[in-house]
Image 1 (cartoon, rainbow, N blue to C red):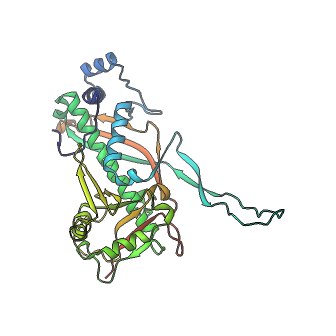
Image 2 (cartoon, helix red, strand yellow):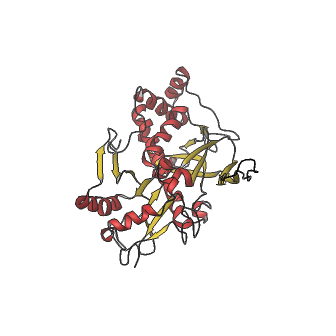
Image 3 (cartoon, rainbow, N blue to C red):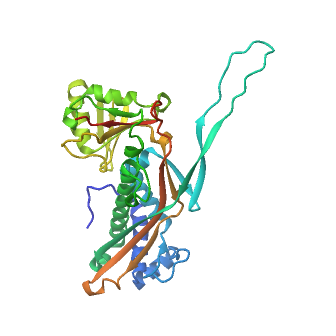
Length: 352
């Protein structure tokens, strides 16, 4: 059942025991008496979410082991989450300060008044958005061992949430498909940190070192520490690896969990399947990004945010089970510069 090539949700000491706890929790939600008893004996709570009714119509707060494993998956495979500032919240809305300017130092003569300056702040407001999954699976899946079941559901849900966060953070266009979230690709259009590749450089195979160093130059100087490359597998292979084969600058090692730790020109490479992953024409489209997402973007999420519901009733005739997962989060790309000022993150755009 498990996809052994994927990053595991449960790692480290007592990983199998934590996966077993989550697996029995899923089985208990389906009504398996033995797993209900197991959860009671091992202190795994079956806590109904606020304002939720029956299991079919409502849902249960996921145990801490499940939430921790979901976060582990999202932080491992979600490129946007790896770079952005993560801000937990207990409410559906949050207002946080954002620095728009700073103090000014001036030379003054002895006894003269010192010119006054002030901290310049405005506010960034987030509104929690409902991110949901509804999956259909064979009821036979719940016959697997509890550790395997826990690992399977947790990794599948974690991958789905991570993919959607990347899609919103990079590609969101403000429409209902992205719940109003505007990604970096749309926010940077027309700004100084939108860097055009050289003429006719519109595929990853046509990019050169000048294109990539111009991209680096499109980032605010104070954002260089902590900056990373953000690209797809195709972008990594056809642009970064190809250029490094002739001029160097790339190191890559395999981590124990199967992911790649890559570094190009002194900066980490982070991979996202939601960035352009094709060898074809990318004229006028964002090809890859470079910069410091912690300075440009914030991901706000509810603490203990995952709610799970399981139903056998709707799919009874096909002997299948529906699994619903819900989280609440918001992504705000709040600092991107303007037409004359570079921002913390730059994007490279293909040129016809």
